[in-house]
Image (cartoon, rainbow, N blue to C red; front, side):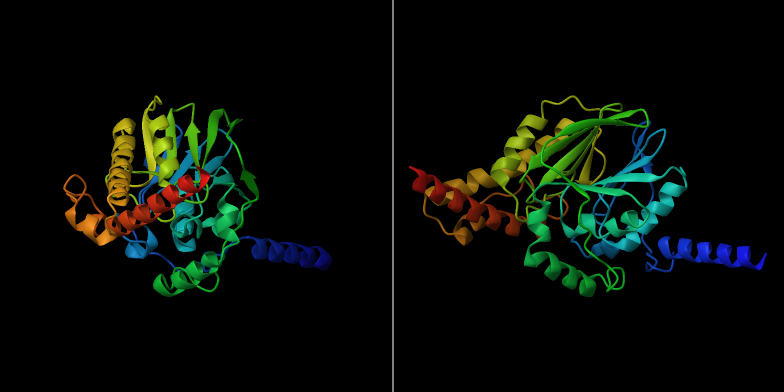
Length: 323
């Protein structure tokens, strides 16, 4: 009997070591609620703002509940937020989390990945994410967030590498639900993907779409991004869940807003290049009224415009060298 008790205690100890402890993550005080969009799809919505607002809860995450499992789209900006998301998921289902699709490797979408990796979920990301993971900026960003988002991002927070990279789109079925993954390529980041729930006609777009707010361009290839949005406008969707902002009941309107913003920036900055204007000159002359009332305009627009100004210049120089 003593032998079996010792063995049982040993097994329990191993199980406790493998299972993530609720004490591992600093408790977050933000309000988070899963909102059901269709029969199988849910999402949580981050608040508008810069990356360190609202304890880092500024991006969205998607949840798809199939007959057999749970599939997640993006993992939020801190392990604490991801742990809270998992608690919310457990209120609606006890099915295992099998896969997490990462729309792109930006900090506000990836620091929660470790929570799902630790419970056995497979992490899937687009080719291009490896560019970020091997860059100096990945570690620098983590160190910055360990300061600016302390204690929710701390010394236990790690950057999780994908278990699998997708270099092209694919379709699959899981638990009676059909899915299509589209690899967008370098658009908003070094690599982007979207997840379409065919069964429900719902698209998780990641940061390819910003609903009801000014997009953050970061290191985006805006030329490719704009071409992607132009193709997306032809799709038949019942709902679109963006990387930031509320679910879009009118998906084409949401796509159109982001597309018009990018097209506006590119047209303005292309004209500035042709007219040999400086960035400060052109920025002060532009009528921004179409977009200035949107959330995050003051925080993001000037930086976005400057990024496009530099990228237009780079594109023109490359074109001249090829001729």
